[in-house]
Amino acid sequence: MGVRENLQLVREKVRSAAVRSGRDLEKIKIIAVTKKVEIARMQEVIRQGIVDLGENRVQELTEKRPALPTGLHWHMIGHLQTNKVKYVVGLVDLIHSLDSWGLAEEIHRQAVKLDLVAKVLVQVNISGEKTKYGLAQSDLADFLIALRDLPHISVQGLMTVAPYVENPEEVRPYFRELRLLAARHNLEHLSMGMTNDFEVAVEEGADLLRLGTAIFGPREN
Ligand SMILES: *Cc1c(COP(=O)(O)O)cnc(C)c1O
Image (cartoon, rainbow, N blue to C red; front, side, top):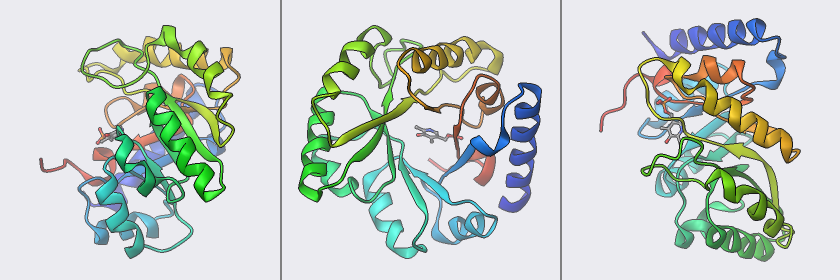
């Protein structure tokens, strides 16, 4: 299937999940994850009305961005190294992957330089898997308090990457936990749900879906 059909199917599934769970479809955004996807196929999803694009590597982001129309919303969704922050702040609308204090300080430093407020999500390692980035859930409250001292960072919500499982029902508790955490801290946005689990994520309150394979097909590694 082509990108167009894939996207149509994704949109239908998102709509059904929203209806099932009584959610407002308007509030749910599909971010097309375009890592390893070439420009021509990115243009195809843009033609289909996608305006949010997610990349997980800084180099790919900075190379592709100038080749595409202005007015798109770019999302940095991957782990960010401190030395690359300067290439990202000001280019992306939202950094989903704030996962350490050092990174926060560097994002703040660059935002001050550019005289802007960097919008971020705090990545939480809800499942506690050793291989996953993100703050431990128990560290979140103190982290958010500390961030108040960095006025050029605006925390918009939380992000998580769920473990890959055969049956997406298994990750429902993690998504629910992230939603409760966000609510406890009055944070609006929830970036959760990937190809394997986005319907469950929608049912649990996700409003930023990060979808690669579901739209573009399998990536070559
Ligand atoms: C690659 C990636 C995605 C998209 O994954 P798919 O399973 O292809 O939808 C989402 N979030 C992050 C952080 C990623 O790196």
